[in-house]
Length: 170
Length: 454
Image 1 (cartoon, rainbow over the protein chains, first blue to last red):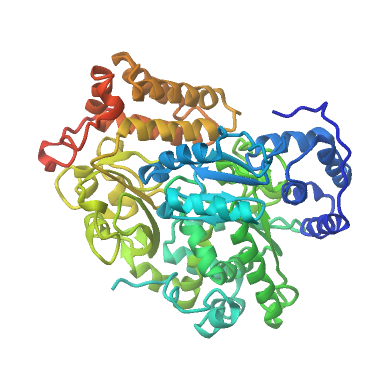
Image 2: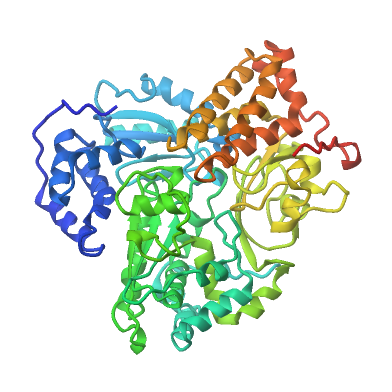
């Protein structure tokens, strides 16, 4: 849930601001609000989540009201309104993936990481959650990890264990 | 081997790059189209009989001809790459492995519609595909196929990729346009249709990835040639995403009219049901379309073979048929529980309802709750009719088709698998770890019970 009272100072890197400038050029004059979704993705990729201060700065940049950013950020499922683990494992939980074992895999991840869906591991490295169809039904079970949304297909428990170990070593 | 139009060169190494794609005859359609008039291009697409590949199956050429062309107002083409329908993953495949097919189609289609700026709206989770498309656009621009004065024709086109934010509803064209304008994905009330007032209030056409890519072979070979492939009003080839309990799930290009049985069991396609099991049910066109038991999947109610075509899949209406949809073909083996799957789909639609219309916002939640209790052995016999009742009250009472899409899987599962739902009520303990199994769902068609409700 969005909590507007949380305020932390936020700093955008020059590289991030340069990306903003690049993105708004895609739209006609006066339609810069169209850049909102791509810009929020860029902010989240740099900051890990969308704090209220970050969203306010985006609103200033695009010359729109703060609420116009909040309502979008809270509507779409990809935007995190609270900090997550460094690696957010998003497992597809919809029908076709469940036919090939997605539910078992989610139970396994919960046990392996020792945290419930949506929680962060004590070392701050991992979170996990079930998400709806990722459009890779023929290669299930699948999971993705942001901010690049790297895709892992045809998973089983062993592959997930290996993946988690690899990420720990990074 | 059946003819391949979109995936002909899919196995050529490096086909995702401009140079290889070009060597294999890529961008010929752009060269050809730019020598025609835009109206001639539209005419070829009309003649081809191409029907929208995103799910609705509306003739693409006709959709194009509705586009308003007021003086001095920009027109837009927006490609719908928000592929999120459970069971559908063909657009991801196309964009990953042969991105220039989409870029080429975008140029041809934008020219036909007189669009000077076009957008490809890709679901946000497909970040890798967004990078692939951006690279392909840069390559095409370098080669002079995008930008100012393309190939000296005087036609200018800029093409951009827009990421979504993770919302199934944005696959609905007006929700997609709202999202592209930087808003929540709430579908608009129609009319006005996007062809009159779409993106930024300007005339806009929204087409699926596969529809746009299909304009390339249509322009290359001519609309008449394309229309020779397929059967009846289902012309051309179609990408089918096959998933579930199959030996070889994946994306297949079929000529429309292929028998469903051949698609499931032949080695050229899915290779049969995995692990030597038997087929129990299928969803033929993505999770929104009615589910069918095995017997009605393979045969029509009159015993004739069912074909992979818009008409044959919907033969029998909702009583004994289904729909082509987006071509998301999901196969269930005998070990799958239809109640559990229906609950899973209901949860999906509840999660993805935008909340704008109360029948959908509330109804999808109720269906999920009732199905959850049936699945976990707390259901009552009256719940089954309650579900049918709720689904009827959603269907047709919402701004966009998500309401219908949520209602149909539930109504059809109860229509065809009512005995399995009843078993969950009668055996509340057993149903937790046992399965109702194949039952009579694969029996010869004459014995299948055909209801005539609706």
